[in-house]
Image 1: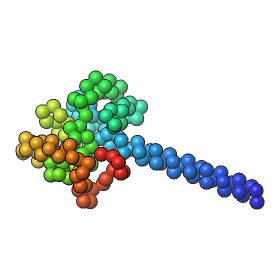
Image 2 (image 1 turned 60 degrees about the horizontal axis):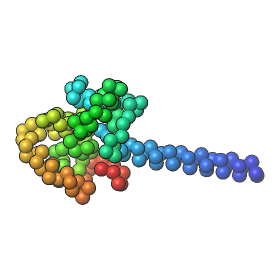
Image 3 (image 1 turned 90 degrees about the horizontal axis):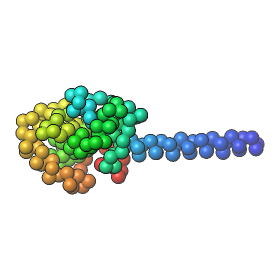
Image 4 (image 1 turned 60 degrees about the vertical axis):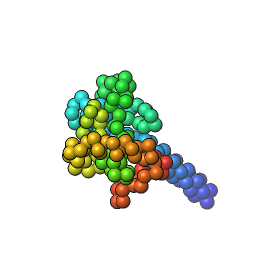
Length: 161
């Protein structure tokens, strides 16, 4: 009987550690910028590239990953140049007063700033009237925490974005 109790207690302890580790990983994932893609690559390689967890840097509450040490060093020198204009949020949705987590594969660099979008049509919409979209998104950015999430889109954990 004692042996059974020992295994039961040990099993509960291990399960508790697993749940705690999962919660910590989830919190870190919620802070992961651009779903782990390298922000510098959009500028230097003209394409999205998945970042390497070995090259991480925390900036302004988010964790950025980079495809190379060179990209990490470039970001450290000028983070404002490389960070997405509206964090992990879709520029087009923000211009409509909604929040949508962007897809790193839907992007455009406009006036030297990286804009990300939730759908592939986003960059095309921005090209059509970039001044209006940017002005509306800029106006909604300060109040983003109060904006509703676009129905049917994934949302981060409470307290992020």
